[in-house]
Length: 194
Image (cartoon, rainbow, N blue to C red):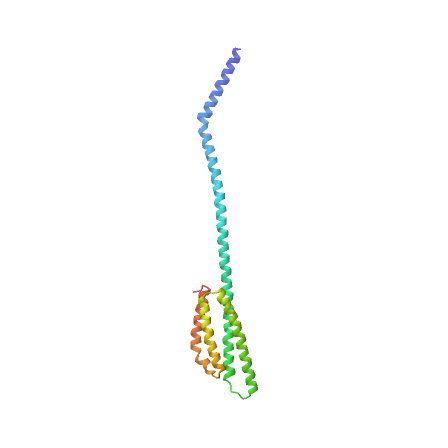
């Protein structure tokens, strides 16, 4: 029995020594290991949350950039349409002036030419008015005001030509050049090309 008591006592001493070693020697190691693991887990969760926030911000910025690009493309398309229409409009005004400047030797031919050029002038003017509505809806006030001033001036010239004063075309070239210069500046501003 003595041997079994000694074995039992030695078992208790070994358990006590192991408990002492675990409690006093290895505990700081385990505590620091557990703390580091907890810190790593918290950092991983923080990184995941920050990544999610960053992706949301990136998507929002991307949407805003895309919207801004699409708006610019719409403005560009309207501005290009205005420029195309203005070229046709100015040519139609010149043709109207020529039709009314020529002497009337053949009345039928002259009247046909004048009616044709007047109809062309009106058709192109109507198209330009439609483009003007797009300018109001999509572009800024500067372009609209410059376009309106140009149209007002050229319509006055056309009205004078139709009333038998074709020399008004030549006399108005300086004013129209200034209006075209204002239009050019408004177009550059609209397209952010200043």
